[in-house]
Image (tube, rainbow, N blue to C red; front, side, top):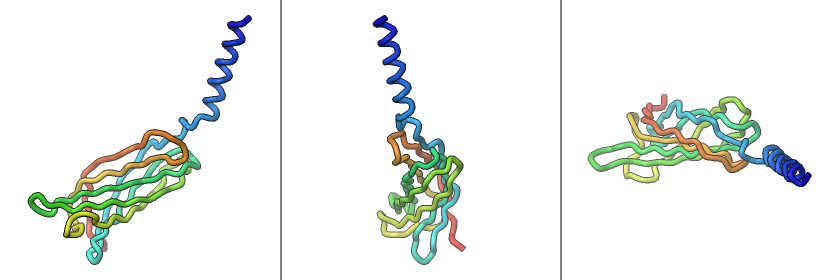
Length: 137
């Protein structure tokens, strides 16, 4: 009888943890779709998408490093947040040069986007790629 009692308690704890556990919150994907640079300000506008748990808030951190010459580069970082619907959510982040004397220019750069679900603890999702920055129209 005692074994059955312990088993039921174990089952009850597992079920309760499953119902109230924040482990179900997650970011399933993040993409960087495009990047454009303003010729007048040197700021880069980066667009992408993120898919995550409906109702959750996701913070997205975008970093870009672009070579400007031998052993020289420009670097920038931008942030944005989105509320998830369960579908792919579009996001936009604006990056200003934070390191390097020259602003961003049209051309290839290295970059990443890091998306973290802030509603509940879960692993962040990162995408790293070559980002071709285009001139803004």
